[in-house]
Structure formats: structure tokens, C-alpha cells
Image 1 (cartoon, protein in one colour):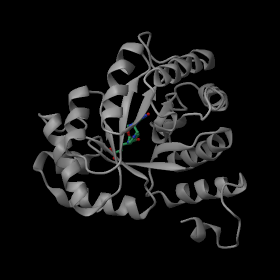
Image 2: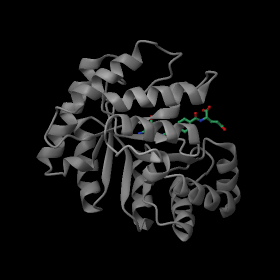
Image 3: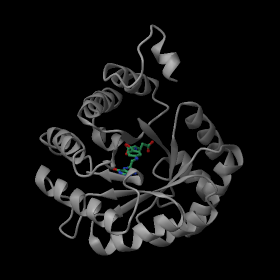
Length: 260
Ligand code: THG
């Protein structure tokens, strides 16, 4: 599992406050804790706290890079904020995200290539978020075709089929499992598949249980990455356990420790 740690996001009130006051302590603490918990990337999202989002992105990344070497995932819908982040990032980097439309892919793929970055592409087009399997897979195929056209390394593409909260439409989880299964056959090698896991339980009770049960089922269907709460130990344990069950790690009685 390529775990992308979700917590450095201006959506959370402590991070929002830290961005406003330019107080590095909370950010450093989250960077270190999430790294120790097994994050492969640290998602960095400025949210709505800052007047100048480009400046806030650069400040966050600089603060993080003072304490950890963990790769950064620049999370913004705005191209200028992504570019600002790319200017200061020293590590391996993942751009989060671009829409699966040809015009947007023609901008983001060359940008990612220039910075040797990986790229999350959403299965969203001009019509919005498709609600069925076929339309999502079709957009995923467009993304893969564009990546090939730009001679972009497919193992640096992450397809995000958009995970919606379970209380919005209970048919969606099964659709997503089907999408995970189909995306594996889109190219050889296939792209990665990623979701924003905590979306799934927004507005519900039993958030942690819903998230980790979805994640173990999703791993079985082919999901190999998630923006997730790596500080949720039960979630991380369930992830490791699912991967042992799928024979991705060797079983031993100490498998949780051994895989960590
Ligand atoms: N796909 C991709 N990137 C993403 C998402 C996605 N990045 C952002 C988001 N979705 C994933 N990250 C989060 C982070 C937090 C929450 C959900 C998704 C969350 N936050 C609490 C809530 O809304 O209830 C906030 C709690 C608080 O304020 O303390 O659930 O889908 N590529």
C-alpha cells in the first residue's frame, strides 16, 4: 500500500490555525508522526485558510522538509498552487491532482515529467463525476492513452475513481471495486489506483470501522494506494493484514512488526 498521509490539510482546524499564524510546531509534529506511522507521501493541502495559497503551500512544504525527508504530495486543484509547490520541493513528489480531460492532461503530464513527478488523475471530465463503472473506466482509458502519447511512465500515474461517502449512494462501493478490477487491465504495466479513503465515511458514525473495512475489501479488488489517516493504527494494521492475506508479504507470527 502506498499510504499518502492526509492530516496536513487546512480542512483540519489545527492545521488551518497553524497556516494562519505561520506556526510550524503542529505541522512539524504531524510530519514526523505520520512518517513514523508509515506514510510513503505526506499530502499537503492548504485548504481555505490562507489569502495567498501559493505562499501557504511553499511555507508548508519548507517547514515539513526541515524535519523529514518523506516525499510530498502536493494537493491542490489550482495549477498555480501546484507550480508554487514544485518550485520548493526537494524530495520525490506526487501531484494531486488533475482531471481526466485531454486539455488538462496536456498541461499536467508535461509539467509532471519536467519535475520527474508522479501524477494523480481523477476520473472527472466536463460532465463532472461519473456515477457508473463504464464511464469511470472510459476516462481511465483516456488518461492511460494520454500518458502513452506523452511517453509518460505509467507506473507514475495514479488513477483516482472518486470515492463518495457511503451515505450518499450505497451502490458506489461495489462500482468502485469493479473499477479497480478493470483498471488493472488498462495497460501493461498498469497505473496505480488511489482513493481519498476518509471521504467514504464523511458524515457517518463508526468512521474508522467503515474506512478500514472498505480499505481491506478495496485492496482485494486491486487498490494499491490511498490518501488516508495513517495515524489510525487499526487502519494501518488492517492494511498490512490484508496484504499478508493476499501473499504480498511473508506471513510470520510477528507479521505486523515485520512488515512495519
Ligand atoms: N482524492 C484525492 N485527494 C484527496 C481526496 C480525494 N485529497 C483530499 C481528500 N480527498 C482526502 N483527505 C481527506 C482529509 C480529511 C477528511 C477527508 C478526506 C475528513 N475530514 C474531517 C471531516 O470532513 O469530517 C475533518 C475533521 C476535522 O475538522 O477535524 O474526513 O478523494 N486524490
